[in-house]
Length: 185
Image (cartoon, rainbow, N blue to C red):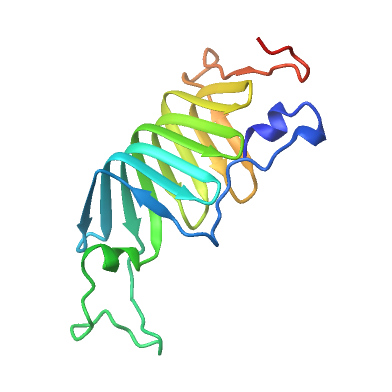
């Protein structure tokens, strides 16, 4: 995802990083789920775990926001009118397209050999942009570690931006790059 271009010692060590597996199912586990059909949201709380392909997300809570708008049946007929069948509960919410996610409480994202952590996060499904924020946002790949307070990752392109915790000239991003052939303790 992000550190490969910055932290790779040579082209052979570059990896693809955090990515989506859009062709694979998403499994969500949590202690509790509350679906708000009228608001178009589903709130997962307590030990939330999301797995899709090689990507793992963990958080204390997650709100899923569904795309608002007309729903159409197989013939293309608008089914959002008064005579439309009502979808309720988990099945109704899960059948809709996801617009974006909000995660909170010790957010952890892992894909392949990269891990990103923060206090809060958002993920826009359409643009495939992940934003992690917090007092200490950490991005690591092996022994290589980058620390800041805001990470913006473009998952389509693998490009990422890590911002410092303070504005102005005193704010700094910290990065530690381990030598390729460093002895392991």
